[in-house]
Figure 1 (tube, rainbow, N blue to C red):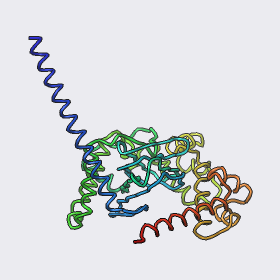
Figure 2 (figure 1 turned 135 degrees about the vertical axis):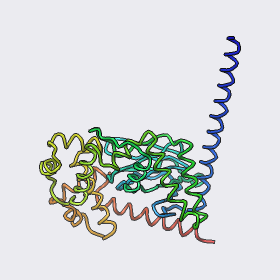
Figure 3 (figure 1 turned 45 degrees about the horizontal axis):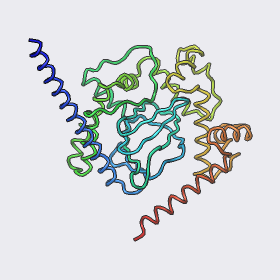
Length: 333
């Protein structure tokens, strides 16, 4: 009897091992296909919108820290690795993991692994809150009504079924007629699988604006809109029906930074854009984004970006010129 049970258990273990191997082989085949398709779609270093809301990125060398504003999106790496900083929190991901971002926030990102032979290849699928809510209703997914805060960014393992849906979405780029019908369905599938995964609570709570996350989303939008104006914490907290200390606590829980730090990063990133895009000097840019003291602006700018304003801008322009020259060389016969 014991021998029979042992044999039955051994057979079950063997079947489980075989199933696990098939899943691993399928996932690796999908990762290889995703790498190949993105590489074919984007042959030079740049970012493109391959389909509405679907962006590809290719980079052939590790990058410096890049300051930007996140958007609600599902991000997958086909080749290479990347690190994202939100306040003091660090998130690193690679082809085995995905990143989910659910609120527009100032972030710092850096590509860690990339080379000419094996460039960094990634995709970003923008998430429409209305679509997320629609999938939640259709799936009967319970919305979280807890008062807990949900961090706006996190990284999770990329399971085989979610990766399979991503690859099928990318395949449709070769069939525009089919994409018109099937792409919306596969996007819904991706959202469904995200909702059913370990980050489902994060995605659903942002979508239905549950708990304190809704209040913080409102505050983030207001700060983004009025970033040039002096921040009035007491006024914002009162409008949201929160105490000042409670507002500070929940804002930092979601965004990993204080309201003042959040506003400061918005101001400094906009000043950098003005100096680069509109050729403003540092003093003019400082006043445009709400600074009354140019020396204070210079100190805070250097603290965030590592160098004084004009030196930083000149370095960025030189990097752009080098990239353009390299791209011209690639185009030469």
